[in-house]
Image (cartoon, rainbow, N blue to C red):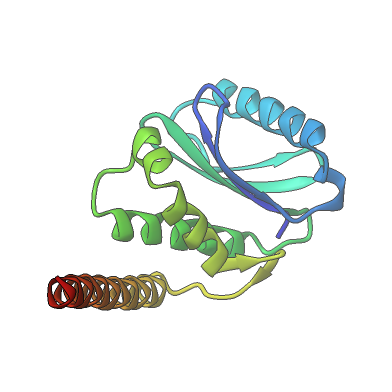
Length: 170
């Protein structure tokens, strides 16, 4: 696995993660993204969602105003790349519970990055079960909400105690 890219149709970045030393610099990444965007834009609509690009196999999915790419080496298993792509798209769609647009992804950038991180870490596959990832994120969110409630309650009690002590001194 060499990278996961979510790019606007015009080529602008929404979210990217690279795991390839040949694409380690921002300049190399931007050049790669620009050339990849041009190549996909020149392909016929409804054509295959896979291509050989430079020395990579690229699987991609097109949405209304953005594309999701999964990049692997030439000897990478295309079925595995497709599974990563499907898992990522399904996970993000399930977490956001709306039709995906570039604006929605930008507004919920944290969710997009969490989904990417839950699937791939430093080029190694971690999880390919979208339902399990969504359930894990829901548990994290629930735990975070519980901590917020506890913190709010503790703050309210501290404020009430301070006001009580202040009134006792008067």
